Length: 132
Image 1 (cartoon, helix red, strand yellow):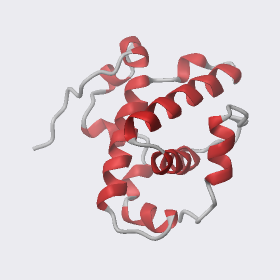
Image 2: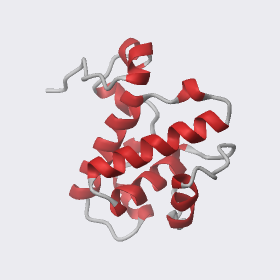
Image 3: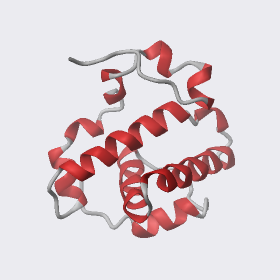
């Protein structure tokens, strides 16, 4: 179960690139992304989130972990779900969207080879799998 942790302060630290990447979980990524998507229109949110994530990954000594395709595709999915899911809290949102907890959710649209390619890290790649 996901708690209703207040992600506002964590999102502030994330944007300022002062967040310690150690202990920053997948759920924390989602919570921070939700906050940033609420603060800005989608394009500004995507720019803000990508810039901060790249900076944090670089400071953590893992700049190659940043993947533009994964980040933009996940932000797009998250934005769509936020708009279409009636929810009052982050915990409620996550209870209604449990598939977002899976690190393999992008596998619905992307093959592992494409998603893990060198190109995917620096260029947004279109999906190569399509669900009917």
